[in-house]
Image (cartoon, rainbow, N blue to C red):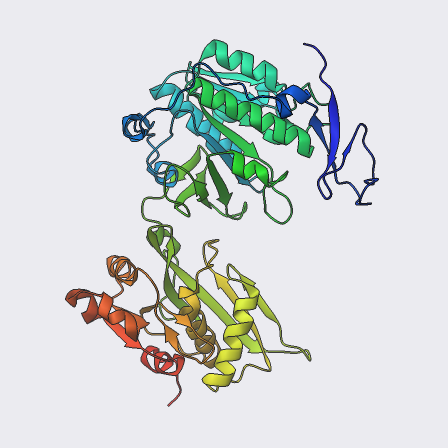
Length: 456
């Protein structure tokens, strides 16, 4: 293969240089030069060359991808993808080290090999023997599942074109490299060029492709941000590696809804889907414990019941502590300020610890009301009555309306909660049967009285 020329482009000022510098000569930015293939000027600035096989077609005549999806016997996975794997799609899966990314994709590969044909699993971090040990632990290995231990994207492309697999798995994209670039694997240029080649391969051959992506210490996919724009779907596998539950969250999906969540349980034989996540999250809950309140959060289109626990104790230091697990710390500080100012709850000399049970992370404000009630319940050591609390708290102490309250109340009723505390304005969104079990409140003080979190 003839050697191509490369150049280095500064990501700050756009300057182009023939060799790499630690500091850009143009703008003096450090470590901003990225290796890029120097393509001939005719291909960049010359006349456009039209592919003779490419021509416009009427949009209504384009084949619908829905009936071509590969559905797997793992419904939680199908849910997150929007109904199954789309041929020719490129999916990027990220997650913390040891969370189970390789385990999940090896399970998926085996399922596809059993149902849809040949699967090529490319490993750049482990040997074939290491992958075989994991596969034996997961169960029987399909005869249509092939493994390739290589990091050269051109070699991977040659094998993919020759074999024509239904699914290609690359673990991981940070270990892949293109021989056209001199930089090391994992650099910005290598990740971008390798992803571009694998994406063109997937679209040209109609091969569904899964890429494993490493994450930084901040939790985002390592490499250039454009990596997430180049793929069709971005999934994150979340959860504590010391706990059993794993959440597969879709943050981008060109073939389905975003923010869908699949819940899995890590077992000895791999990840098993959890059919009723709410029941699992509440399985160990003690209903008459102070500081414990249940809320209904919405993950994509799925309502989930989760338990919030709050522990409030007198501080032994000059500055009280605020510690959270599963909710934003700044949100907790805001809610404690609202409780102190609007509900006359004295928290200035109290340490507050708030935890979301089961490893869930709550980001929507509909859990504000449950967090406030848990804090007051923990402070007064008074158990909250068996309610599910739903609502956003405003700075004035008002309980503001939330979306999809009908689905939330219905999910709470399925799990045995006969009463729900909801914003008063949301009562009009409920049907007659749901309205009978919902109690509308307009302020945090009223919610505290309804929940029994007051001393008489």
